[in-house]
Every structure is written in C-alpha cells, then in structure tokens.
Amino acid sequence: MNAPANPFDLQLQPNDAPVIHGPGFFTGLSNAEYHSGPGISKSGLDLVAHCPSSLPWSKAAPVDEVKTKALDFGTALHCLLLEPHEFDKQFIVSPEFNRRTNDGKAEWEAFQVEHDDKIIMTADEWRQLQIMLDSVQAHPTARWIFEQQGMNEASIYWTDEQTGELCRVRPDRILIDHHIIVDVKKVDGLDRFEKHVEEFRYHVQHAMYCEGYKQHFGVEPQLLFLAVSSSVSAGRYAVDVVDLDPDWVRRGHELYREALETYHQCRVNDDWVHIRRLERPGWAVRNDERRLS
Image 1 (cartoon, rainbow, N blue to C red):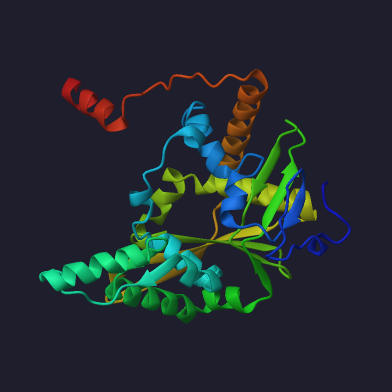
Image 2 (cartoon, one colour; image 1 turned 120 degrees about the vertical axis):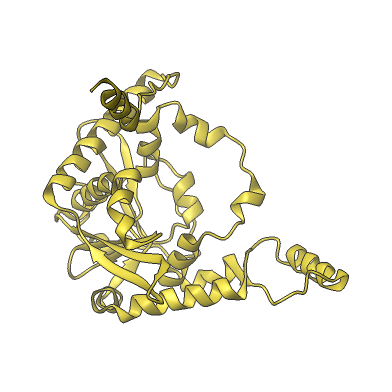
C-alpha cells in the first residue's frame, strides 16, 4: 500500500506549487496541473484502448482554441456543483445584445474581446444551468451527497504493483466518513445513461478510481454516479444517483488491466506506432445475415 499514516494530512493549500514525483494524495492541484502531470489517467487509458498511437498524438496535436471556448454544459455544471469559487474565473453570462443592429454587433464584439479569457454563455443557458443545479438539490440522495463532509477535486497518485506504472485519478467528490467516491455526469436524458457507460467506458473509470482509492487509503470504496439530464422531461431536468452491477464492475476491471498493460508495454518499448483494426459494425453483419436467410 502507498497510504501514509494519516492520508488526509497530505493536503496542499491552493497557493502551493506542488510537484508530483510519486504516490500521494493532493488537494492543491489545479485541473490543468493534474492533466499535464506525470502518470497515466483513465482518459489516457481510453486513448490507449482505442489505439496506442492516440496517446502521444493527444499531447502533440494542435488545439483549436476557438472551439474549446464553446459552452459545455457538463463542464459548467461540474464547476457550479464542485468548484463554485472557480465559476466566475471561467465563465461569464452575456447581456442581451441586439445583433441585428450595427451598434448591437459592435457591443457584442467588444464584449467578446473584453472577456476573451472566459467562456461566454447566454442568459437562457445560465437560467437552464440554475434549474439543473436546483434539480440536484431537490433530489434527496444527491442533496445528501453534498451535505456530507467531503473533498472535491482531490488527486490520488499510486504505483501499480503489477506494472510499476504511476497512475492517477481525480475523483469529483470523496465522502470522507463513508468511503464513497462520487462522479458527476451530464447526460442527454437519463434513459441514455446505460449506453453512456459503455460508450465512454465509465465502468473502466469505476475500476481505476476504486483501485486508486484502495491503494492509497487501504479501503475498498463505493463509487456512485450522479447523473443530471440536460434534456427536459415534463418540464424538469431529471437527476439520478446510481452504481453499477457486479458484472459491469468486473468487466470494467478487466478492460482497465488490459489497457494499463498495453500502455506499460508501449512505454517500456517506446513503441507507439500502431494501426487500428477497423471491424465491421454489427448492423452490417446482421444486414448480410438477413439477405442470406
């Protein structure tokens, strides 16, 4: 185990400049520092699982800065729920401009220039976010999650015993007294969440986050997904708190180990030149079967 005698003593103040050299528990890392730091994360393993070449590509490929400033409801909701003190640093609500007039266009352009460092949202988008936030508070279990003593956006680093690789996770929220990890997910309708688990490999996230927590704290945690719909149903934005059944958890652990082993082999051999095999989709195979029957 990598756990210190009292792991919650390893907290950093926001103004500290932490340097990650190995295993530990850190609360002073910004999101940018975490993602640019050492070790392999779940998102990195997702790239490896897709094709190992995707991992170095993700670090070297240019970024379209204009596109990254488009409003992402998931990011905005995440910030409001977990880091509300950071919201005004990242987002700003635009006043109404009549962009059908020359004056309105000029005012809008000036507003964009003045707040070029922030993501601009409309008043209607802000209204929707407020309702989504209130919807979370209206759900008894979701409200309970935020009433408990907890830590948001802490980072856990540990050394994997089988591969020797430094791994890292950044749980949205940890409930200290209950050994519960909570991850917030924005979904376009709760009826699609099961599909999202497979599509975005949330079961792999479940495995890696629980492994990191156990390696550091010596306790097997429970991981809950707090799902918030961005689509209206009967005038409401639905909220649900879910966990995964054991079969899903087991498969997620298998995929996590497979991707970590692939990453390890690629790294030690410095072998990142890979070609992805594209398989025929199931619907195409079924079409062939129907034509032949």
